[in-house]
Image 1 (cartoon, rainbow, N blue to C red):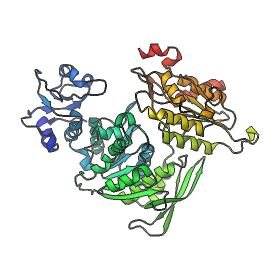
Image 2 (cartoon, helix red, strand yellow; image 1 turned 30 degrees about the vertical axis):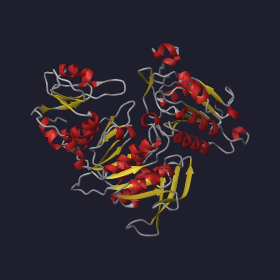
Image 3 (cartoon, rainbow, N blue to C red; image 1 turned 90 degrees about the vertical axis):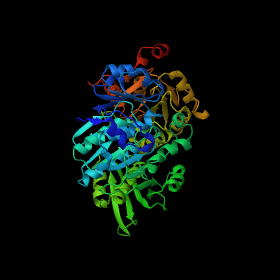
Image 4 (cartoon, rainbow, N blue to C red; image 1 turned 60 degrees about the horizontal axis):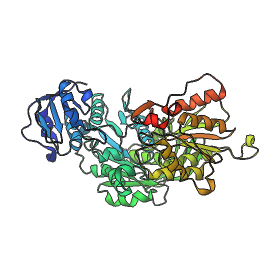
Length: 543
C-alpha cells in the first residue's frame, strides 16, 4: 500500500483540539514512532514512554529521512518542521486515521473489550460474519486477518499502536472488506490508540481484577474499558448505517450496573441471569465442547422461538463468550440466528486457549493463556471437569489437576498472591514458575506468590513447588502426572516470547509442552527453547 498525502490535509481533518495553524504543505509518505524504522518521506512522532523518550531520537529520525516531526517538548534547531502537541500519543490516532483516508468510515466496526475472553469472543464474531457471507477482517492481540492474509501483531502486544491499527483498517478497505472485528484493551483505550476507529457495536466480556499497576484502581481500569462505549457517541454517521449498539454482560456484577448507567446509546445485555435480555439455558459442557439454548424473546424476533447453539470450545465459561458474540451479531447486525449458530459451531479453537497437546501420553496436557485470577479460576475449573471421575487407572480416584503458572514482573503485584491462592484452592498440585519477570527478581516474585498459598497447603514439595525455569517446571509436572491426570500450563498461551531483564527470548508454551512430552516419552520431537534460567543465575540475567 503506497500512500502520499499532505501534512496540511492531515491537520485539516483531525478534531479541533488537535488542529494547528501554519502547518507547512509537506508531502508525507508514512508515519513512524520508531526512529530506527523511519523511511525517507516519513512523519516521525516522538512519544514519551515508560522507559524511552522518542524526543532523544529525533535527529536519528531526521538522518533516516523524516521530513517533519511531531513532539511534546519545546524544542527547535531542526532542519525539518517541528510541530508541538500537548500529547502526541493522543493526537497520533487521529493523524493516522487522516493519513490513511479515514478507513473506519467505510467499515462496520465491532469493538470487543474485557479482562478475559475478548480474543475468543472476537474470533467467534469473525467466524459468524464469514458464515453470513460478509467480507470481514479482524485485529486481535494474536494477529490481524485481512482477507487471505494473516499478519502477526507482535510478541507482547495489547492493542497495536494507533498508526498500525489505521494501516490495517486501510488495507481492509483496499481489499474490499466491509466489516472488522477489533479487539481492544484497557491500555489501548487509556493511550488513545483506537479513538479514531469509529465503532458501531461495542461488546464487553467482563471486567475483573487486572492491570492495577497501570490504572491504579479497579474504577480507573473500568473507566478505561468504558471508553469503548463512550466512543459510540462520537462515531460519525456512515452510508452503510451505524447501529451504535452496546452489548454488556448481565452476569458481571462488578461492571454491569456501572456500564448500564454509563452507556448513552442503544444497549442490550446477555447472560445466564434470568433477567438478562439474551439468556442461555440448558447448558451442557463436555470434553468435546458446549451447547446451550437461547429463547429469542428480544426485539423483533419471534417471541418464544428457541435456538440451540453448539461450540467446540471447551469450558462452561465459553458460554458467555458465545452469548456475547450471538447478541452482537443477531441484534446489532441483524444476522439470522441460524446463521449465527453455524458460525459459532465452525470455530475449532483459539491458539493457546485450552489447547490440548497430545503426543500419545496417558494423561492430558493443556496450554492456556489464563494470566488473571478470574481466568486461572475458569481454566482450573474446566480442567477439573475434564478429569475422569472415577478414573479406572486410579482405582476409582478422580484424576489430578497439576497447574503451572507464574505472575509477570513490573505488572500488578496484588494478583500474585491472588493467583497462588486460587491455584492452591482449586488444583491438586501447583508449580510456581517464571512468566515474564522482566527486570524484577524472579525469586522474589515466586516468594510473593508463595505467600498466597493457604496455610493448610503451605508445604513445599507436597502440594506446591517453586521452579524458576519454566521449561523445567513443565518437565516436572509431566513427571508428576499419572494416567487420567491433567497438566495445565497457564499464563503464556499463544505468546511467542518471554522477557528476562530487558531481553525477549523466543518462547512458546506449546513448543515447550511438546518438547517436554517428547523427552518424557523418549520419542523424536522439538527441542526445549532456551531461557536464561537454564544456565544463568538471577544476578547474571538481571544485568
